[in-house]
Image 1 (cartoon, one colour):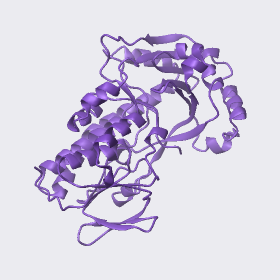
Image 2 (cartoon, helix red, strand yellow):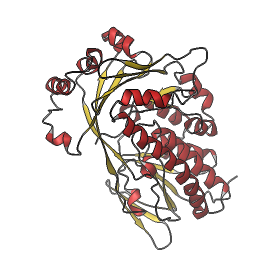
Image 3 (tube, helix red, strand yellow):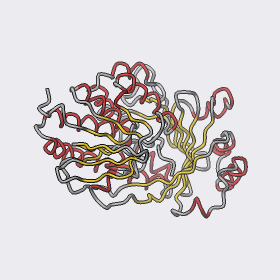
Image 4 (cartoon, one colour):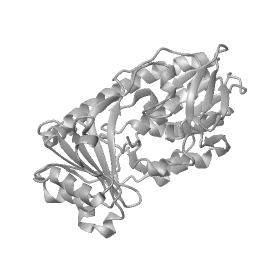
Length: 396
């Protein structure tokens, strides 16, 4: 049993997988956190694609929460095919998952993962429709929370699980996120096996990476049969405003995107041609590698709020889940909130900085000259295919 008083008020800002997992793990330890979410209801199914859940991080948290068996029933162990080709259509990697000996990073859609956690959580702790406007430190060490709907709360521990543009982060440092140099345009091909069987066969059961000319087209099979497409470009930060592509006019937007890939292999260009009308442009941001902050005993961060990185290492949700487990364990084991925060942050800084470095290296590789060949060479050093990309969650 935790030595931390059950009367301590713990607020979690953000009901993404990390925030929900932290709430569940604290509930299992007899505490009663409150989760504040700005959206009117759970939006996890709408804000990200398929995730590969790693044994040492995401799966560890699921085991701590007693959800691993249910996760194993829902996860897609066979959807780990991986194809890499260049813009001319030359294949460098073409791996097919072994159904009898699947890898240790099974796929699950973000919405399914969220639902799995929610089904085990006492959801009365979630306050939807609460957008944090301001967090004010008080002289007694607690923090006053002021929400856009007029609600005001005072808490002993404030945990920012509020993503890339975290409001809680501003309490700890004035560091702002940086543009990574990459912009993505997300498209969708629903029920690909039915609507575009040739493309579905080309994509196989997993991810397809086509790379060249400092551009990348990624196809990612999701559990509902759709292929999420990430048209990824190494461009200036203001490109979305200056490119002249009318993203609110899907037919014309797709035509203009195809112009950018006019000399690419036709099979790859089909990922743009076959997409439906929903088009989501995104800038990809990151925090400095090794980012830390001045410690405050009653405030801390998890997930993207703590260590935002590009999706080119597939670590975002996995680290958010691991952060939740590490913080919950620290709260359970330490005598005070201050000691728990200090213990958690020391451990988190170490593992997250290494993953941020890997993410940055992968991003640079994917947009370099001869990227497909370089990625193939890098992959040859691993016994199993490492994660490369997960669907980014924030539309920017």
